[in-house]
Image (cartoon, rainbow, N blue to C red; front, side, top):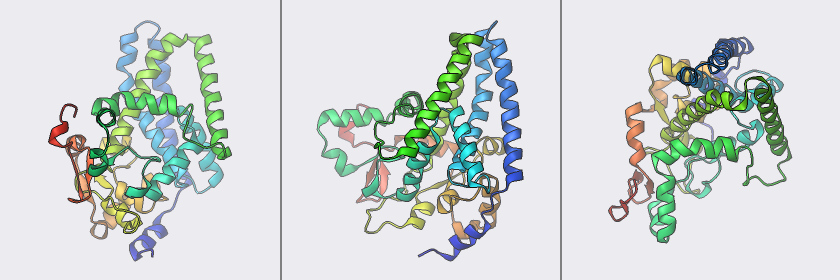
Length: 330
């Protein structure tokens, strides 16, 4: 049953073509100018070009949030505009739009459900599941949950490899596969353009660190907004969508500039409750309905500290570090 709060928020969700267009122009124009400068500079100074990449990465992260909104039908009022824009913005961040939309919508439909993990989420085991594993699989899981793997290697594995060849997607999902192949075609064309213009090697000095930083930041934000100590994880029999949204998603309280860069995605509790709210409405509706939403507020520091939490303890109903007998990798 949909609550009165959710009904009120659904009524407030109003994608606006003018605001979406202004956001695009205000982000893509400076990003284009910055990359033009970077590709010019890299021909004489690779280090200076690399020094510019954090600025470009911040704008790329914002671009990804726009594509994310498109996938929810929350950026433009028009479905066609969302899908067209989502495809091209997704290609910019190495993300096949339809495939990501498929897995991300599954994440929204199953977030916090222990019986439906494994699609569009970060791999997480319960304590009992972990303790039942043989030693080799325990080591593999501990390695996968290490911050250097999640944030260092993870962006390459997900965006550069899996998004090119998603081995877990059945062939029956034709639209998703078409989007994957079309995105790969666009990226191949971009590779050829780089080859005939400034050279792939020089282009890599700009593209690789920019996208790695953007993807790393994106994974960090996604991780801390669902993996925290007193979160919400239930079995299907007792799982509830609204409870999962409000108790299993955090309000990542960011400074104003970081909030702008991330497209207000820190208001994740509100986003999970009504995913069709555009990024440009999240802050306003969070403030308007804060007393009813009762968000779980965390800081960036809290998010960093949450990386020590590795397992969900169903008995204690909270996330915990690895058991003492398995402390060799944390």
